[in-house]
Length: 114
Length: 113
Image (cartoon, rainbow over all chains, first blue to last red; front, side, top):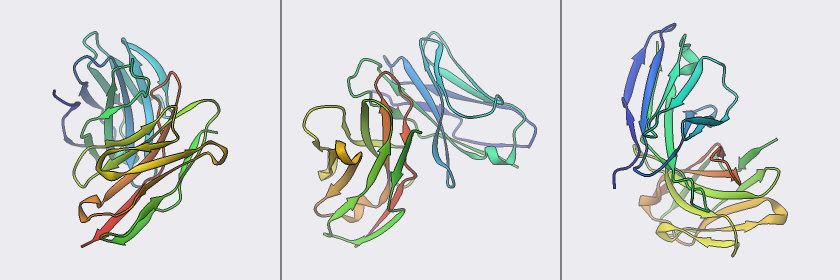
């Protein structure tokens, strides 16, 4: 069973540009959530999607947006990149029927903003 | 406010030593509790989880954790660590009906062979 797949694995962008990251969840999983991981702030929640609807949003500026498609694949977009957006962006998927609500994480996309 | 505190940021142990990593949380309502591990260069993996029942839960690789509701704690333990346990460990909580995890800042464990 394939795990959560995130593409690309690495990205280098310039300040002011925008970027789109992609996440393919485990087959059968309908919930996708995104996290930003940095050495200083740790793992911080960005958004949560289920059936193409955003169910929850973290405390990030409006430059961070996301969406989910009918096949449960998800994308997140960051516009007008800032140096502080450099981070590892993690996607997690869940079946949404498990009592334990366990999330399975991808390997992440490492974004560097220069 | 919702938060998770991990008391130890860096821990260094010798092989065969016992491990206990502290985790306390602040969250209104019923919670699910998790410990995730991130080995060098790898993705986050679930070690164990608690959502109800026996407060002592056992996970993979000999890890266990005890949920003490009165203390809002979910400490991770392992009686005898191995060099291969070198990793970063994250405690996390979420509420019923959401996949919004609140993570602790992580504990970097280094086990000396």
